[in-house]
View 1 (cartoon, rainbow, N blue to C red):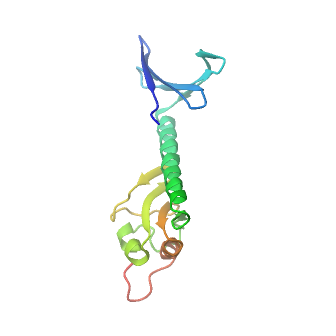
View 2 (cartoon, rainbow, N blue to C red; view 1 turned 30 degrees about the vertical axis):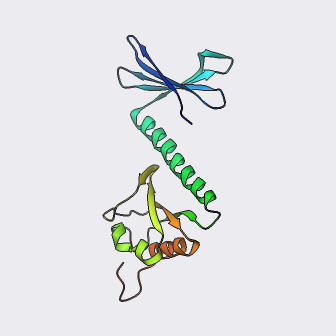
View 3 (cartoon, rainbow, N blue to C red; view 1 turned 60 degrees about the horizontal axis):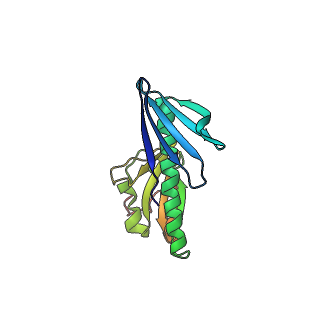
Length: 170
């Protein structure tokens, strides 16, 4: 479903982008010439009148965008999970402070080779980091989004929690 975003130039102020949700509500964002952004929620009884305006700093606007994008990615993964009738598991696995991989790159885990499961994203301090490469370095508190069979996801959980057995890398 395509969402129609309407753009309106506000002389002397900036630009307003509006959209109507599937529930019939209208929301928008005013980007002022100064860079300030305001989130606008329109009155359901009068679509030309705002019922609330929330000023956002740059950091707040960025955080809101990350939250919306991360929730969209996780929703898409959950939808994929539903399509394959339970054969696929999607979980967030924490990297705890005592993990042997804190400060080490993802490639050192050899997670995909060892388990068949894939690390598809990392959530760090409210930011979604999709498709991390082998050079991505883990930090304590990361949530690793893993997709695979139940056994594969459990294997990645074990790898991130414990050092590799003697004679194995990672």
